[in-house]
Amino acid sequence: MHRPASDTRLDSDICKLAHRLTQRLDAHARAAADDLDLTPAQVIALRELTEPITARELAHRMVCEPPNATFVIDRLEKQGLIERRPHPTDRRAKQIVLTGTGHQRRAEVLDRLAAHTPLTALTPDQQDTLRTLLQTLVP
Image 1 (spheres, rainbow, N blue to C red):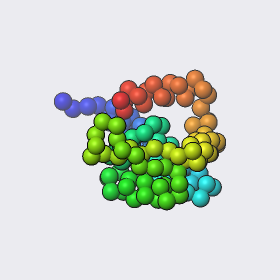
Image 2: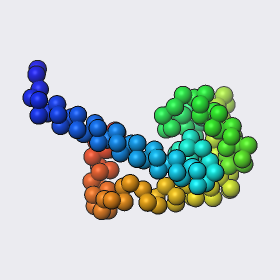
Image 3: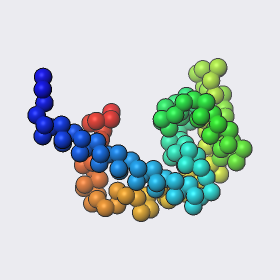
Image 4: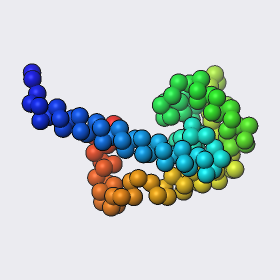
């Protein structure tokens, strides 16, 4: 089935805009990392550590390969921000858990990421609508 050129252009425009927004959000995360003396990957890891999870789960949330996540986890552990603990149901796995200092550092990361984000150009209702649309596309 052939799609009308207008649909193709609309798809292309949406993809370009989504890509540019991703670039702006990445630049924002890099700036936050610089301000907090962390790497961008550490900022992403701390943002994603909402509960104890395995390294594999963290890699999935960070959208990277497990060995890359392990490298980030090692650095966070050396900084005293996380610890590896035995998994409660899988004796072969370890869980990544924030330390007290890690919780404080994560709060700093979240505060910095929330400040002057490219999304502040949207009203709260628009942000809510965008979240709903994105959840439809990326369940």
